[in-house]
Amino acid sequence: MKNIYITDLDHTFLRNDLSISAYTKNIWNDKAASSLLSVATARTYKKTAEFLDGICISTPMILLDGALIVTMDKQVIDTKFIDREIADIIIKEGARYGIYPFILALNDTKELSEVFVHSSTLNTHQSEVLRRYAHDDNLVEEKKIKSREKNFKVVYMGEESLLRELHATLQTLFGDTLKFIIAPEAYVQCYFLTILHKDADKSHGIKSVQEYCGFDLNSLTVFGDNLNDLGMFALANTSVAVANAHEQLKEQADVILEHTNDEDGVAKYLAGVCK
Image 1 (cartoon, one colour):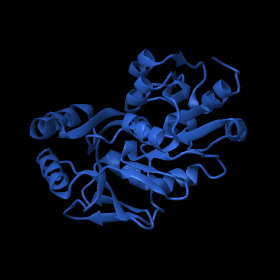
Image 2: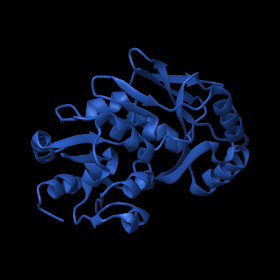
Image 3: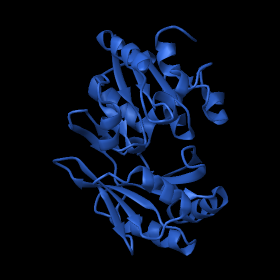
């Protein structure tokens, strides 16, 4: 039975400038002959494919926090959507707090084209994020933001206290029918509140990949840095936190690396340089 390695991208496999070093590429790709390799990320298919150019991915990818399971050649294995009616209620409740979300939705199933919807009313954190996506062709700005038919996730960005208030309101309305993730956003120094289908998370994603590939969880090693990695840490035989990981994640890790994502921590672990 082959070992399987699944890594988070941002602040784990990717460097902080969103690059992947030649060293990491070589170590990772060398594992392809003897192992199964994939990623589990909050990123969309489009961005993930861009970042992983030249990187071997031999099993379906877990994208959008588990809302989309898809192969690199766009074969969709599973999807988990938030209903339009529910998403619109979420938007309405957020507006009561004076904030509006980003909405990541599927625009075309055949082509796997995604749409990134945002309001024309933005806070400083959202504006900073959008500057990073300025050249993307899937951005849609709306004065009165509305959800789509197939919504992967709804994401708010802002101050922690405000997002926790909104989370409490939404939790009261929807209970456990939705998945909520609150965590620090390291790129723009704020917090994010991500809202997903109740079964859209990395742990459910791993189970979907397991069913597709038929691997044993005892052969699974995962790498991560943030709170949305907790589910897959609980499932894996070996969970590995990079040195820059959130302290709560480190508490659940089997291995805490001495190296950060900027220091090729994942690759050094795979190469046996560190344990």
